Structures are given as C-alpha cells and as structure tokens.
Image (cartoon, rainbow, N blue to C red; front, side, top):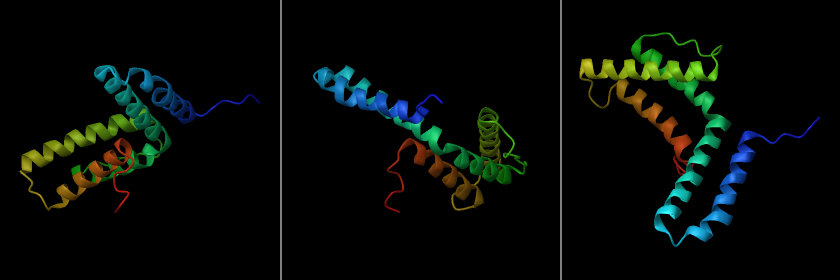
Length: 131
C-alpha cells in the first residue's frame, strides 16, 4: 500500500513552509507579509474544518432545527448536504428571530450563542481554551 499523507498533514506542511521559508524573505514588505500570515491562518482554519467540524455542524443543524421547528436528519447526509442544510436552517432561524423580535436571554439567544461558539472553535483554536 502506498503512503498517502492526510489532507491536514499537507496543509500543515504548507503552513510551515510559509512561516519558515517565505515569511523571512517578505517580512520587510508589509502587504506581502500580511498576505502570507493571512494565508497561513486560513490554511489552519481549513485543517481544523477537515479534522473536526462535522460533529459541530451536525449539532448546529439539530439546534437550529429545534429552534425553527424543522426536523434535521443529519446522520445520513454528506458533508455538502449537511452544510447546505445548516445554512438554510440558520437563515430560517434568523427570519424567525427577526419576525418575533426576540430579545437577548431567551432560547433563541442561547441557540445562536452555541452555534457561534462552534464557529469560533474552528476559526480560532484558542477560543474557549481557558474556559
């Protein structure tokens, strides 16, 4: 069997290349250094999405489905279908919150905070590390 690196291993190798090999050469050019750091960060986000976003996305779909009164059967869905369904449920939740003029502190608020927390866990691995 041929060795094939995981997607995340490849992304991490590119991140390391950007920081160790490219950034030292472009650090004097602010715009290029900034773009290099942004690229490095985005590769990290993609790696974290590949590693562990599905369970969080499934939970988001279930939470948003409960909020909107729509049943979300997430177990048999492919990744793209799950993402599309979760986005549709988020739009429906936003419409419901606007229509009801929901105020902070209610069930809607708690659901939105939980979904946002999941998004932040992927975008920033340090989020929630101290809680």
